[in-house]
Image (cartoon, rainbow, N blue to C red; front, top):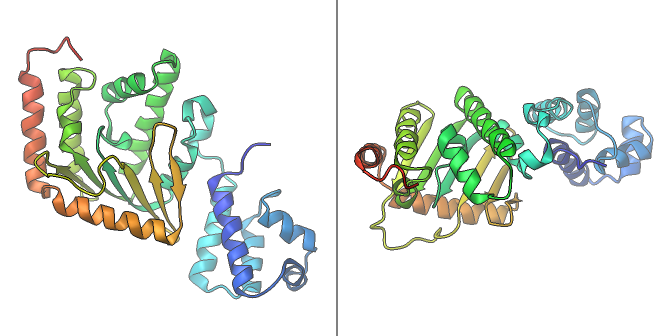
Length: 287
């Protein structure tokens, strides 16, 4: 059986939390809703999905306020729709479907990257080079499809009302991934994207002697329904947490790297200067 989508898992968890806060067991909840106990149980265990109308019924039974009802009914409707990424198979998505789903539902995304340009802001050439280096065993067709996923993520997040805040270590903009020409094009693109009203790009300079997030690339995602997640990347794949202590810890890390990073104007200047340096370099043939 396929794993339930993150939206379904979020919805089931939220409904269970409301029921427990109302101090009702599944039998009592079912009686008040006029349902069988089994229906409530199968909804919470994600053996079946739940539509917006039934979500509204349970929210009323649990005494939820109107903003919560509206958010969960909307989530129930979204959970029943397949996202654009479902046309790709698991090998292409590489366990990244949950992240894309969070990104789609985000009000704000705050990302710190130490070694590469954030995936949602990469050019095709840069993305292809990064994926090929990180996953050398995959074939060219899979690389092309993973690049296509990143390009669609970028198109959608930039067209949305999501606020995107990025801090990139200077090392990531100096390393000529894919070659000097590809890197110059990537930085030109980053400069262009950073000029958008809901996007901010800051560079953490090399002369910063050290910081608490060294070796810890991460993304903080604030959803429209108020939920928050942190995504932590690693060589064995990413992990997610919505635990309050983890969110608070990574908020502190984020505040720290933001303070140490260059401001927006100086970040733009260093991006422009570094792009020019890549363009003027003579070793284009040595990626």
